[in-house]
Image (cartoon, rainbow, N blue to C red; front, side, top):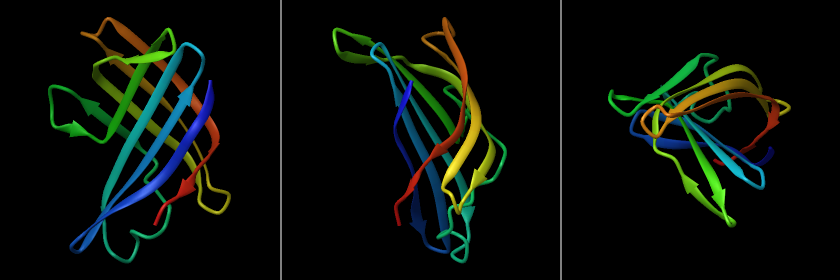
Length: 129
C-alpha cells in the first residue's frame, strides 16, 4: 500500500488542546485510514509534534475514541467503507526532527467479521499549525 496522506494537526481549546495524527494508505483494491487523537495538552506543548508512545483504542460500544482505523474496499474504483467495531493504533516511535512515525494497528469491522492488522515504519508526516 502507498501512503497518500500523513498529517499531524491540533485542536486548540481554552487552556490547551488535542493533537491528531491522520494517515491514509491506498492500493488499487483497498484503503486504510488511521486517526489517532492524543491529549489534553497544555498550551506550552500543544505546538510541538510529540505524541505519547502508547496504544490508542477505539470501540463502537464504549467511550473509547482515540484510535480509529477504518478500512474500505474498492468496487469499480469506488471505495466502500466498512463499519469499524473496534480498533487500536500503537505508536512505537516518533522522530519530530525528521517528521517520521512508526507503529502498528489492528481493526475489526462489520460485526467483527472482517479483521486486519499491519504496521507502518518511518512514515513521513507533515504538520499543520
